[in-house]
Image (cartoon, rainbow, N blue to C red):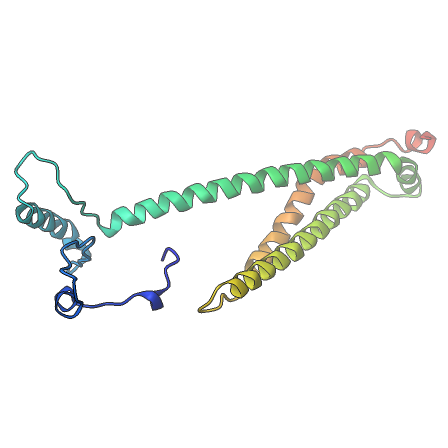
Length: 219
């Protein structure tokens, strides 16, 4: 579960270790794994184990225990906290990256609107409506963000394949498989398109509201 190779573990009764291994009295048991008959009986089992160990260790009431009894719920909660913290950290990094990328798309589209002002004026003069201009720049923003998504997906796949091959080359045992989620890739493209629509709407709306006469005069 935490990186241990199960092929390196040997399971033996502790009485057999005492009898068969020379010079081993095996008096230092570090951990004991127990299971209850059902999940509902887990608290009772934990209480009974605590009482039994207290009696065996001769611990009087009020004295601190020299052992720790943990159940799977506590371990699951700890792992949940760790995974939740990592998820929040990765989500924060992804959010900052999306914000920076979205602002970059907005700036590029604003520059494009400024440089193509005369073109917009000509299109409006020959019959293009404001919504036609709006859709034109929105499509350009979405294409720009989707191209960035494709490049990012390719770089991510390349990094995943490279790291997996490096790990397999440096370690022995079962080789790690290379797994690429198609569903995650499709979701990322939809998200990239949504970012393009969100950050490209203001430049597109600004282009659609230009005055044709003023746009034709623009130098």
